[in-house]
Image 1 (cartoon, rainbow, N blue to C red):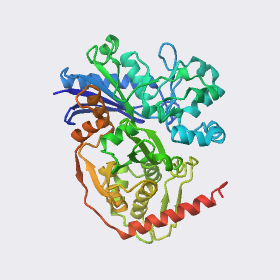
Image 2: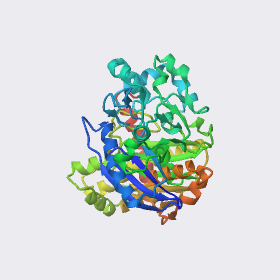
Image 3: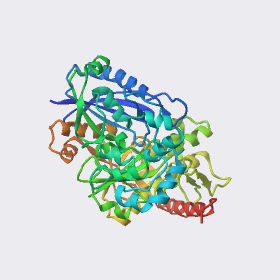
Image 4: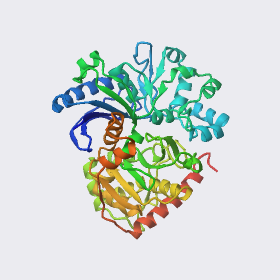
Length: 483
């Protein structure tokens, strides 16, 4: 039976797993990443050092029976590498939103074109405005950068010596045409940017190269092992969650995310309100509704009250949602979709002296989920009804989150047997790239296993969601600079 290793370069942790072609995961190893100058910056060399440590462990446990490697990782980073493949500076992660000026300039000059050709308006966390800011404020780093890579692409380069990207990460940069899945040369030229600094775009299931002797010595992989480039973590999570045209996926990790798909062009109505990206399945496009601080907002609240997260979730499970529950707006890192506003705007509304800590914990969880229900409602309004929703990450592991998510979303709820959606999604691409499956859909159909979640109905939760919408609109209208 064919076995491959998948690698996920997360924001806070790198994971490495061994899969067989049925979707069974027999080995899982992970290591936490250090932070460097700030939570928004990481050392790319540390990514590779951690990957090497993990690969040595996983290859040893696999007994040398590894026929390929497939990759996934966080999106929207700015990482320039020089002519020798060395990072010119620490990687600026997806959470870095300092390129607001450049993002505003893009929208002012080219807003309609951005939506029509690339599926999204500019936001400061995208890579392109960060590149513009680098050229403007750090021209020496821009000049030294031969290529701009994403996290998984840097690992692919260090393993194979090849620098390429693929459509999912490229569409998260801004400047890749969704119809052709290639960089728009004229667009980069108009901005005064060198499109040659962008890596060539290949399909997500492409074998981008083979493990070099140098990488073999560092990782335990056999020299010549094929490396499948894979996709960005949003797309791999969608695959590993079973997202299709009738199934959405709900994830509450650092950010809160709602993922869905459609045929190319179906997302035109939602562009500018939901994110529209290329998908790893070339026959679909990927839709994202998000709140930047989903799980992070819960950690922030727990830390303020000196609560370990385990205790926070226990209290949240004890707390009831009622018509006296306060409303928590989890926008401490900005609103995200559908307003596409990334200015911090978190708030508690409707607090009373009678509210208890368990009630506040439960209300915080519900508040982190409500923007994702809002995105789901908008998606269905603009496209079509979805029958199912898969609960991923915190949405399936914690009782309080699962209970409130189940009551908040009306669709049939599913939980995947393997909660490592991004690793599983990368494995699907890996086996497709190796020819085990003829296409991504065939791999998904065979490798994904889910089970139903007990359906819950709670009128109080639906009423609380309506209060959330009302208070969120009031807070937005009353915010400085808002009309």
